[in-house]
Image (cartoon, rainbow, N blue to C red; front, side):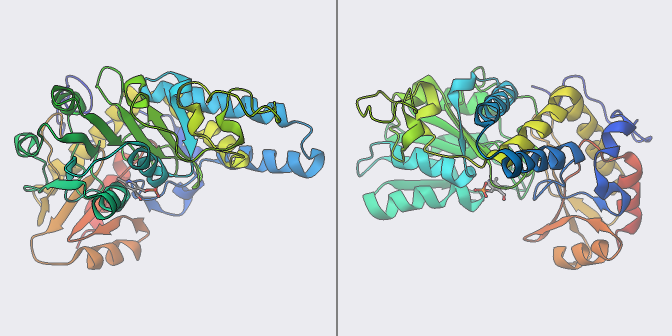
Length: 392
Ligand SMILES: Cc1ncc(COP(=O)(O)O)c(C=O)c1O
């Protein structure tokens, strides 16, 4: 894979705004702020709010009468999600969040002392605590590769993998550097050692093309409130057939079986694919919102979104070269992403920069010693200019 997309070039002149103005109009926040913090929480597009409200209104007026319609929306959302992942719908289970998905994997495998897990020392805590619990409770070793100048060096991570490695777990895109891992390469490494590749995809799904099958991803977890532009409280877990052979459902309930409404039949098999990992009633109104957001993303197209964000972030990084800022994020093809982290060479802290920009209605995020800039599909080159002009 090249950059975000194939044949990418850096263009110092203003990149064209390739998304439509109609799309931008769906985001009310554009009227009052220059919002560049989608790696934290995305503002919700208007159709998403309307979909949530319509479902709640339906419950107010009709109780459970339209229950089957809600289930149909849930299944459409699952299908859209599976399409973004390059998976089959029945391989994707709804969860509360990314942490639940990763914990589900940790708790569903059979561990023995001496097994090890290979990960990265700066993963978001959701992808650390489930594994540390195994270390503390069961004597599983957790091996962490260190960051090198904003990058993960594949060879260093590979050094940590051996015959006792049961899984490699990594974020597709790192929340604190924007570094993008080569999943297929990691997947091959995992398979050479009969280990699973587990990926936290919350910082990439929807804005980077993905194909879990060809990229050899065995399990992927994420949630909707960042790049999927959906309400907080809905997550998902993809399990490949290979992963399902090894991971048991440990948290189960009435909808974990093949015919949930056959209430008195306790002899049922687990539901097919990953559906056994869904336990009970889901946050139905939020899933209605998720479906609306997924439709917007699907209609815009992941390749077009990725290209747009590559244009914006290439432009940002090129212009930063003449300012007093260091780009911490790798901008190498295949390693760059839509997240750009920068440091002020003059020693201004990330918190100071964040506050300075916030006072000017520009929303970014401080992450350690870095300022994180994370535009989405509706952001414009003019908003990048405004950020550059406002930086102290
Ligand atoms: C890489 C990564 N994983 C997970 C999360 C969130 O985890 P959860 O969905 O469990 O709240 C975040 C951000 O908040 C993140 O940056």
